[in-house]
Length: 414
Image (cartoon, rainbow, N blue to C red; front, side):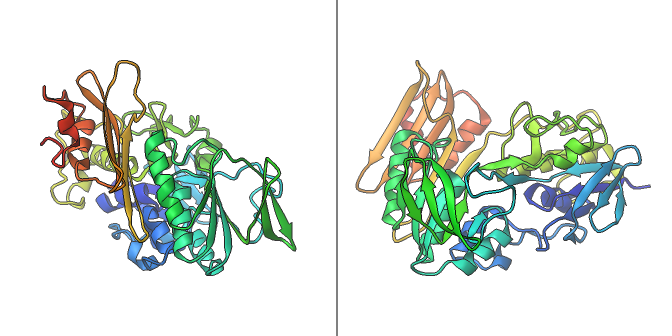
């Protein structure tokens, strides 16, 4: 008898697992699973929604099905439509929810007309329906998501203001110099950028947003407001089921929760104290779990894809030991800007730093070396060396005894 595997969540992690194994996948959204990383390109009009669809899993996705309760004793998942799905193994890939900031004018999850998070394809399509040339749009949040949203709205002809509470844009990934170059590029797209700027409230008229209030008393007129204040792991289903939850659903090196029959992967999972919230780790976790389940369930081997993904020998159990995640972003415009960031971009005392700046080409490259290990880097405008740098960092191997400048040459010293 084959093992019944049920996956809750039709995002990147859940679909990747369903591509590897025959599972029952419950997807809450009505759309076919899609690549969330490309939503800004859909908003900007670069791609049609169908272009960002993910490759189909082995079994059809049950779309528009929301799981509402897990019965761990009966090993069933109850759905909002009244159906019940039994499992031998359950995989939670519930993703994350957008953070709604504590602003005057926001009450609970009910948002005024014109105010939207930027997390789902429906968010994207609703924003596209609102934005036209000349519309005044305010983006709250200057991280990766906020910068992407601001760029897309500007491409649609909106008058965009980007507000960031911190000192600089994408402060989690970039150092001060790289962030300043990014700001110059974003402003060249016609976006007005305000850093060290705290939003305190929203003004409304007849249920629709009319302005954004700043803590210093300044008021920004707004017909559209995008909330890009980060995401929070979606853990309600797991918490209600009594699983161990901290920031995310706590998992071990086998991506197993406190219930041995339930796993968690992707944005909702917390491994070794870390929640990643990025596509790369979600894919790695899904692949690691697929390998683990294959090693435990020989019946899956014939149906598993890709063909070369053979189950490991019984003497070697697959394990997930963490991901060294690299962030990449392309900002469009008359002169597109590519950027990549990984690891620790801010050096500690005693670290070696190699930095190259080409102002005429708006290129910036920097790596941080600790002892004989590459621990982080930032590249803007010229990513020729990113492949070799990423391999050196992800492999966590000792660097060759050569001048550190070779790390930033176009071949990455390879």
